[in-house]
Length: 313
Image 1 (spheres, rainbow, N blue to C red):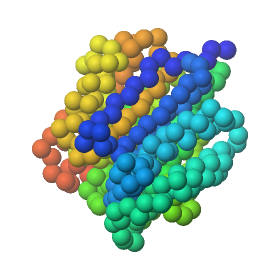
Image 2 (cartoon, rainbow, N blue to C red; image 1 turned 30 degrees about the horizontal axis):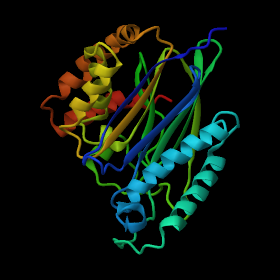
Image 3 (cartoon, rainbow, N blue to C red; image 1 turned 90 degrees about the vertical axis):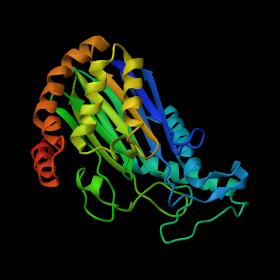
Image 4 (spheres, rainbow, N blue to C red; image 1 turned 45 degrees about the horizontal axis):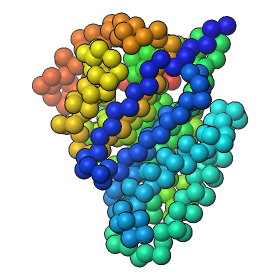
């Protein structure tokens, strides 16, 4: 029976400050039907402490890169999809690794920003492990901590699979208009949680992970989907798609951003564009065009119309 294969792997990322970005990413595919993609957002506020033993880099910078390295090593040694639920094993592995890094750099007192929200080496994580399965489908396991997100995107639109972890209850729309605080991140100060969700997806589809700098400065969640699709349709290949995303986000994002997308089941980039074109037209007609110059009540009504499909899984 046919198993869909990876046809496009996209990375679009840009630090706000060259050489000092606190987002990181990792990905690996053992073959065209088995791999993972992941992004990490070092938490600059709670991880502002600088470490002389790490060339003066912040805990947030170190944390995102530590998570990236450990996640890749975990994939090489384990299989994110081989067990019923690997979240606890991954959490334990990350905790041990972060503890070792903390021990290695803790001889420096550093420059410490104190506060109740301080954490040593804090970072979010959003990881999607993907395996092709018969009947033209893929098994996808999402692992996450914090507010970096995992999605899938098909002809029915963008679907958020992860749940943002704030002290207050927020959805993807209200989060754009609030200053909610994270209640769970990977860090070296204490215990943390890794969340997990596994789904079977029909191909063709795109599996996506993103840090909050990619979606957190747009007008609505619908605009993130439209940004992904409109830049794809304007591009002639994957490189132009990446540049289109970076050029669209750079003027509006107030943070580092990282997006990884793995497209499965498409014969070519052109076939992916043809597949997604009707959805992009529908999205623009029903949501993007009506949102131009709209007041908050209108935007909320548009979001409420879009919301059920966005959270359909």
